[in-house]
Each structure stands twice: as C-alpha cells, then as structure tokens.
Amino acid sequence: MLINLSDVTSRDYKTVSLEAEIEADAFVSRLGKFPIVEKTPLKLVIANKGNKELEISASADLTVVIPCSRCLEDVRRQFSLRIARTVDMKATDEDRARNLDESSYISGCTLDSERLVFDELIVQWPAKVLCREDCRGICSKCGANLNQGECGCNRESLDPRMAAFRTVFRNFGTQEQ
Ligand SMILES: [Zn+2]
Ligand SMILES: [Zn+2]
Image (cartoon, rainbow, N blue to C red; front, side):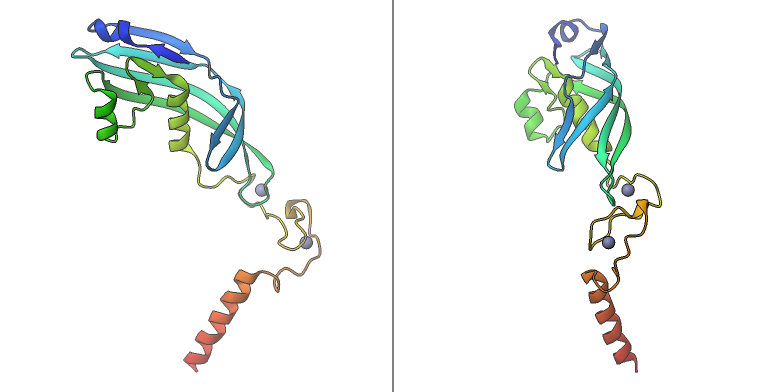
C-alpha cells in the first residue's frame, strides 16, 4: 500500500496512526518464493518530530512457510516485525541513493508499506530453518525422509564430502608416520 506522507510532513509535531493491509501472499527473494499463510495488518505510527523529520514505528506478525534446510518439509516460521525508523523528508531520492540510505520504501512523499515489510523480512530472514532441532534430513542416495525411518541405504560410502575428508585424513595420517 502506498501511503501519502505530505500531510504529516507539512505539520510539525503531528502524529498519525493507521493500518495497512499486507497485500503480498508470498515473500519473493533471490532465495525463492515463500507463501505467507498468516498476517496481521501493518500497524503504523508516523510522528513528525519537527524540521521535516518523521519517526516511523510499524509492527506486524507474519507466518511464512519455509522448507526445512535438511529434509525440505514445510516449516511454518513466525516473524514478529517491530520496525523503528527515522526519515529526513528534506532528503531527495537522489540524496538517499547517494548515501546508500535503506529508506527506499520512501519515494518522494510516499511510503510503500509492502516495501517496508519486505525489507524487514530480509533482515530477519533465518540462515537456516529446521523442522526440529534433531532433523535427520534426507538420504543422499534415495531421497527418503530419514525422520520417517531408516531407508536401509549405505550412505557412508556414497557421500563424496565424506570420501574427500577421509582421503585428506589418510594423507595426513601418512605424513605423521
Ligand atoms: Zn527437517
Ligand atoms: Zn536411502
């Protein structure tokens, strides 16, 4: 949703509160597309602190489905977005670009609430998601989900990383002797 900030920007010490529906039904990044299955509206409080500086607070709760890093089963991950930003409305878009300002969610006198949510999700995005701490992953040979039981494959001899590791270890052992 695009929110026009000209009214609050032009009136010193004015504060506005509003809610913006989160329109996206998936979070799309270079990592892939992840469905957003639950979401609250984004609650925004925008306060003019004088001198055309806006203090923006925003909060929303989202549930996003992300595959487990090991077994690829869907995991429902909750995100609690609590955003606090200060924006200098005297800066032009060119100033912001030059200063590598993150506030690309501000363009001219407009705030893009979807962009604000997206930027915060990127910041909070987990490096790894596990369906459970001791997820056993999938068999590298047959692809079976090992959380559902042992498939019977002999994986030890098939994992090339393990084989390489053993070679290094063997060479190292030879030098030692
Ligand atoms: Zn898993
Ligand atoms: Zn297997």
